[in-house]
Length: 179
Image 1: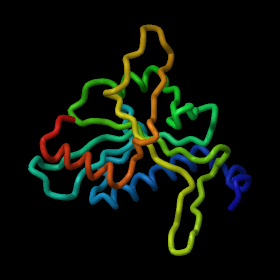
Image 2 (image 1 turned 30 degrees about the vertical axis):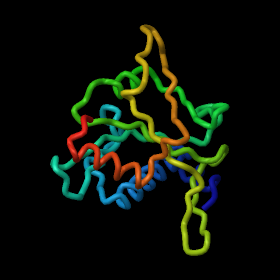
Image 3 (image 1 turned 45 degrees about the vertical axis):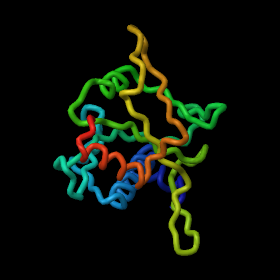
């Protein structure tokens, strides 16, 4: 089904991107030996909670995830050094920066420019999503100055949200690392 057909049936590309970002998140989390708990639609800037299914010295390490997805050069900008940045509204920026008992990550599914409906590419015996997932830790963000309507969030190219990242974060948290 092409993008025009999807649009005619009432499913906007933003919905398709949201569905794709959730699906990719679930695949990565599952591959890391974890599961999603409490999947929600943007409740207090949290879309899902990633929980380890493996035993750790500290029980049930977890972290929250706020998902974003984009294929727009206007929404997500590529920086000269290869990193990416995007503007986040002041309310979300502040909510994600608030101290929490459970750490939170802003996770971005970044699709190629102009891709409105994410697709899987069949490559032999593999399915490949033409895009990457990056994460940013709100604890590293500077607070916004009073009156600012948005803030810039940096997604470093080396901060990919992968199976290895999820495993290492769960090990850190499960060994008693501070959220």
